[in-house]
Length: 92
Image (cartoon, rainbow, N blue to C red):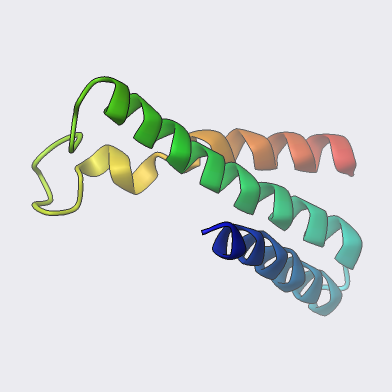
């Protein structure tokens, strides 16, 4: 749902700010980086789902029955890892 997506990004940003404060870092910077990571994670998951729908594929594999395959465990990371890398690199 839209509420869940927004809540996930806001929650990640709040936890990032809390971590930044506890780690004696910049809470605002940590909040932005975590918020970017949460948004990128959702975009990665939606992009992988769109590819599967376009090709009429239900699962990427059968190694883990009922879980959509190994790529479903990491599809959000395909977008999240680069997004966090660039956020940390350019925002510091």
